[in-house]
Image: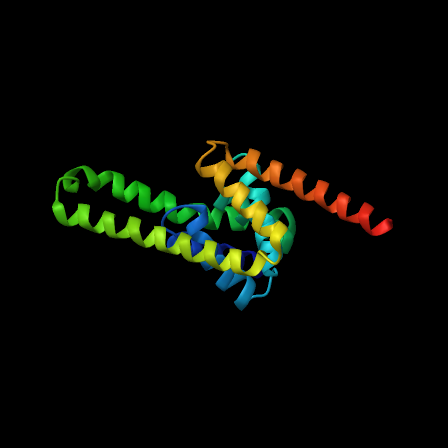
Length: 182
């Protein structure tokens, strides 16, 4: 029971300090789950993020559920999911009750603008970090650029892009295997 409470508290803390959704949560997860607690390697975390992006629901909740399940089974999944969701529920309830009074306040507008910029910087930082660690050859660079083009310019959903990148990589791996056989 103590381990479940620790899992809940860990994800409560991550949920409390994550502004901007699932991608903004990645630096906190990396620090807490990979570096500090060593629940996962960076590669495993990225794999969970990929799966979390492709499964229905909110990516941060999906990833928390996967990690909780990996650590303590079904009860761990419930504890991690409750922990990641609880801060948002509390904050949204409080903000919704008072926000309408302050929406026209210029200082509130400035604060939200600053938060949005900060979230964009967090996401840019993690993209840079992930690209630096995972783009190890020309093919990986091509997959990255292709995925970026499909997402930004092609208007495809992230799920479709993940499937396309996976299929491309599987095909390329098979081609390389056949070339080595000859």
